[in-house]
Amino acid sequence: MTQVADIARAVPVAIPNQLPPAQEPTPVLTPPKPSATHPKQRRQTSWGKTHSLTQNGAEVVASLTDWMEAEIVPMLKDPSTNWQPADFLPDPSSDDFLARVADLRARSAGIPDDVLVCLVGDMVSEEALPTYLTMLNTLDVTRDESGASVTPWAVWGRGWAAEENRHGDALQQYLYLTGRVDMQAVQRTTQYLIGSGMDPKTENNPYLGFIYTSFQERATFVSHGATARLARSAGDSVLAKLCGTIAADERRHETAYKKIIGKCFDLDPNGATMAFGDMMQKQITMPAHYMFDGKSETLFKDFSEVAQKVGVYTARDYADIVEHLVRFWKVEERSGLSPEAEAMQDYLCRLPARVSALGDRLAAKAKKKPGRQSARFSWIFNREVPLL
Ligand SMILES: [Fe+2]
Ligand SMILES: [Fe+2]
Image (cartoon, rainbow, N blue to C red; front, top):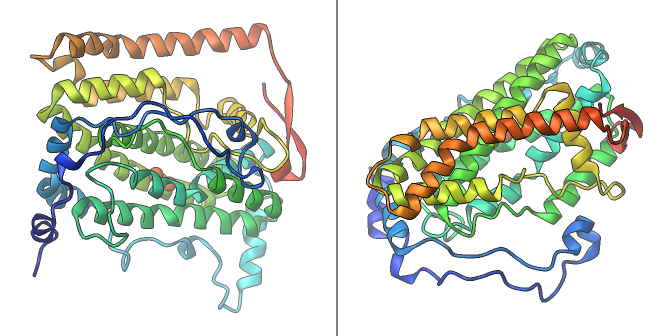
């Protein structure tokens, strides 16, 4: 049988000397159509830097192609045996469908509004999956050049997206059946978010792109795990199991992306250290930062504050992820670095303590000088949710 790597060798994943030159931020010539995007995005005046991958970096990433096929592609699950959203939902073809829906509604009746807001926010973030595959396919060397390319990078990207697609589907169908959320408002938010896209500041650079996905997959593992615990304590064990199952997928994806960057660190410690430091200095923007329901410009901020309040995703989690990645990629132990990379290594090794202290300071400041006490969410029929 022809292996993916054989085809990849015949059709190289990238021709490094044809990398587009790095470009500085470009002014926006035509603002996006107002109707489809977040208002903040309409006011944006520049795009970020593009195509920052170096020639050496391109060669390093291209050299990982066979390893990618052997080690990472097999981490994808077989769709014939993998879990599906239907496994967690009442079977509409069964005679007791309506009774099962009634059970589901009874189970979910006790979920507090703040947890519902977190579930919806997580679900909308998952539903913007077209954006995330687009983002993966902006990356030089690894992008899927045809839409059905058989390079291990492209096979992984599509397989990853296909697995992720179940997350939004499952949560949306579950939440629909609970009758607890305004589905029109929720679906409108998803449409806006996909229309807005995202700006992870990854510059078409696979080093930056896979550092970003390593961070994000871990963040989603943390947040789905936390919603699982909250759903269980609110009395919905099926929803808890669903969130826990999603969290397990996120953890597997996190492992894959971290391994890719681990390889970059081994082969190109200077480039990987600089890239990791660069992403940390820019800070990791959440994928749903352009979230908008057509009314509230502060929707994402409000959702993030509720998530922080109930412990679904907190400043402490951000600091823990930074610390975990610094340790996992053995940043401190990397030797023979250039003076520039050595300075970045120093910055990265001090970063977990700094981020964690900053989180504590911000929390103390918020306590002393509280801002808004609550926010209304269209997702739950404009009910008010405390932010503090
Ligand atoms: Fe996901
Ligand atoms: Fe994910």
